[in-house]
Amino acid sequence: MMHHQTYTGAWFIYDGECPLCRNAAKALRLKESIGELHLLDARDASGHPLLAAIRARNLDLDKGMVIYHQGRYFHGRDAMHFMAVYGAPKGLFNRFNRLLFRKPAEAAKVYPLLRGIRNLLLGFLGRGKIDNLTEREAPTFKAIFGAAWHELPPPFKKHYRNRPYSQERFRVSGSMSVRTSPLLRLFAPLSRLMGGIPLVNATDIPVTVDFESEATSRAFHFNRIFHLPGGKPWRFHSRMVPTGGSRMVEEMKFRLGWRVRFAFEGGRVKLHHDGYALCAFGQHIPLPLGWLIGSVEAEEWITGDDRFDMCVHINHPLFGQIYEYRGSFDTSAIPALEDDTDHG
Image 1 (spheres, rainbow, N blue to C red):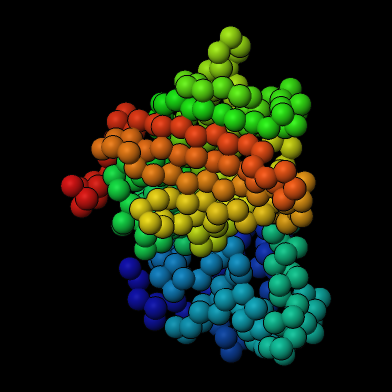
Image 2 (cartoon, helix red, strand yellow; image 1 turned 90 degrees about the vertical axis):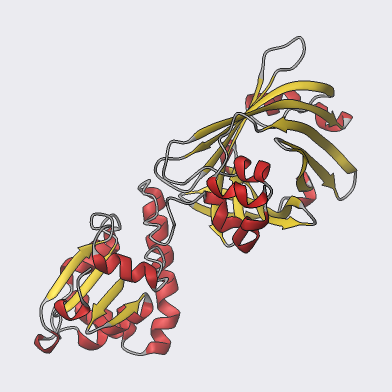
């Protein structure tokens, strides 16, 4: 790795897919005393030593650009403040930036708005995140479970072993039973059409579930096929998107999302209800639908060396439990992770 002293002048590390960031990089002019300005597109220069240094300092490029100068890293609003203070007093961008970000207190107020506009633009353009802090060789759920990851029994680690930014696909097979309230069964044709949960009453349904990574992001897909008796298979697909810490949003068709918090408690994986969201332009906008849909809770527990059971239920504030599906799955077809031996 190159030593910091070889980086003369100032280095502007930005998101080349973001129109705001790209135009700012092109328009920025610094005072001569700062030295030459170097532009570094974080999407095209992932192997650059400065990108490794930024990750080591836990600076999230999806939350703000970075300026490196003389051994110091300025991130987000601090980068904008640096540009306002050391920008050359010419050009419309420099004058505008100086007006908004010269004072740290004002920068703290304005920068979140600009970041929100950036995120909306990227979502509208269909661009993914830079995601520079993600450990791409580690399972996606390692960060979701945090320190509890190392406590997970081997069948759970198999279940959650998919890595991000890959094309990994693993399958479990099992059987499930479904119980649906009479009121909810009225919506079964609509749910099938929308690719939603099976609104039926049935036991011992053969089920396969494919766990699939997404090559361009940290998203994780569940592809479930319920082989219902006397009918065509019922398919239920969802996409799990990490949103920070232990939280994810399960995105379903028609832009509806279930916000969920993962935990490993009492030897069980638990999925705690965290509300609903509208999934649009890469954003998850909270929706107050608990009064209509109810709350969803789920848990999984180990039942053998290569087996786990699971249960999902929906409780309505007026009608009580209106839905439940539970099942048992075999993980023997999934290769074990190397660190599973810690539990042997």
